[in-house]
Image 1 (tube, rainbow, N blue to C red):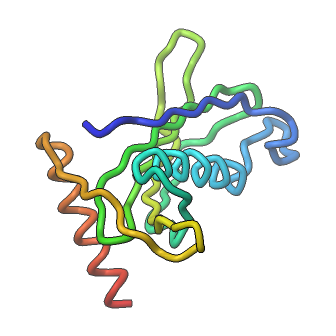
Image 2: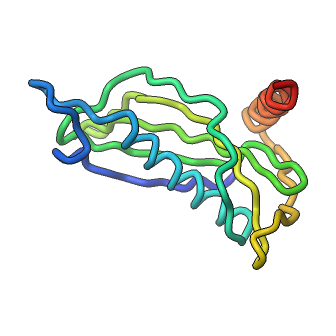
Length: 147
């Protein structure tokens, strides 16, 4: 598996809506996803990156005030100057158990010192899971190009 980048947050009042049982704003977790995804992309490319798109983001479960949110980002595919990063977000219970909140796929472009796209190192899938992710990323890319 490609190297994972991990981020951990505690859901604080400023991250929540005003409901009786405050839930994490979707936009807040999206911002955290963008940051951890960008860090994974920067580490992989050894360069600055910019977000091109969030290709797919599904919310499966909520996160609430005082929950611990753990996010894991991993590179799943590379093109010539772009790369896809998968970010999985979980609520981590105090006993260490986890429940997935969402999964997102983001596309980044690597940038040179003049903010122009630059080539990225090729990603070669090695495990069966990496090959499945890589093939799925290629399918998502085809769909994006058709749009």
